[in-house]
Length: 131
Image (cartoon, rainbow, N blue to C red; front, side, top):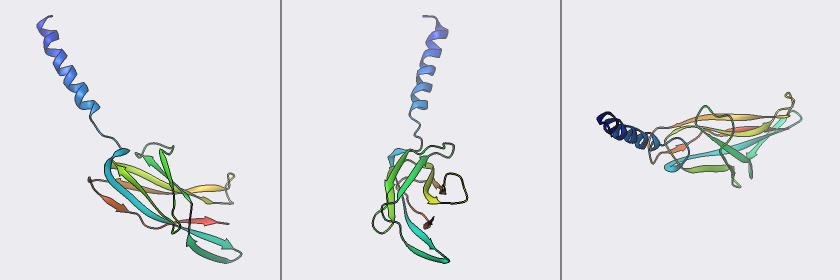
C-alpha cells in the first residue's frame, strides 16, 4: 500500500463511523411528548366539547416529512403520549371533519422541538371539530 492510501483509509473509516452514529428524530431516546385531544361536536348552532376517546393521533419524525411514522389512540380522557423519542423536531396531528374540503377531513397539526434528553413535553390541548 502506498503512503497516500495508508493515510486516507483511516480517515475514511473514521468519517463513516462518526457519520453513522448521528441520532435522528425517532425512537430510541428519552423524550416524551404528551397531550390531550378534545372533540368539538357541532350540532346545529350548538357546540359540545368532550374528551376524544379512541381518537388516532399521529407523529411525523422530523420537520421535512409528510407521511406519519407512528400513531397512538387516545385514552378515555382524550390523553395520549409518544415515549422514547430522540431529541429533534416532530409533527403531531389528528384529523378533524371539514365539510368545506373535498376529502371531508383535514389535520390539526402541532410542531414540536425536543431540545434535551429526558424532556417531557406537554402540548396545548388539541381541538378537533366533528360535524
